[in-house]
Length: 249
Image (tube, rainbow, N blue to C red; front, side):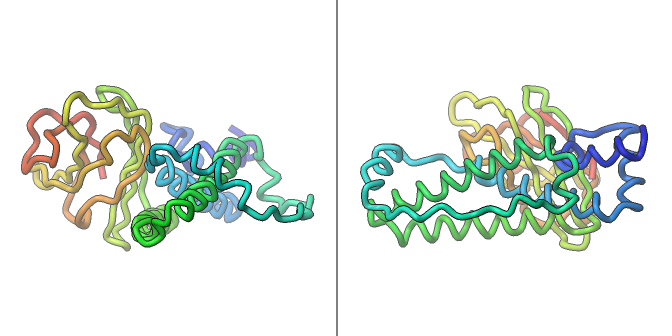
């Protein structure tokens, strides 16, 4: 693969879609190309924020409340965008287009949610919920951007994929997941650290969310893997079945 080809892999590498020898080659390229390294850090931060947003379920009746509130919203005049983009963003823009589209949709969803909250006079409760989501999003973003972050991606045996990112410097780990099938009954997905062959509970994924991200409870120190299992609602003290995926740390 040529140096020019390597420059185009930033988007795919940032979301864990580059594996094997190609990934090793690209990691070597990142050590020599600060522009690509910075671009990967920015894309990972964006992916983390988008994953957090995907995990949020819109409240019932949101569309009707937003549509009824639209006449009350003052429209802003159109602005003028600078058509000149920095060189790192011009390169490989086709790879970033899905992320940019998702970010635009996210901005619209956030604005609509704000209108709905005002319409229902639930500002206090909504601010508390939003603050919690933003704190976790900021923590995941910081984890993605730290230089010593490691990434491992694998498919679950039941479908969907998971990526674990961990940092010894921040003493934190997080899981990003996508395409997880809904579990039957009241079962939930539970996260685990594997330490000395034993599975230690590390939190639950949001029930009903097929995609999103979650910080693991506790530090990854001493663990050699992160697992996901299906457990009864509320979680278990120890796994009740084999891990659906076990990602090395």
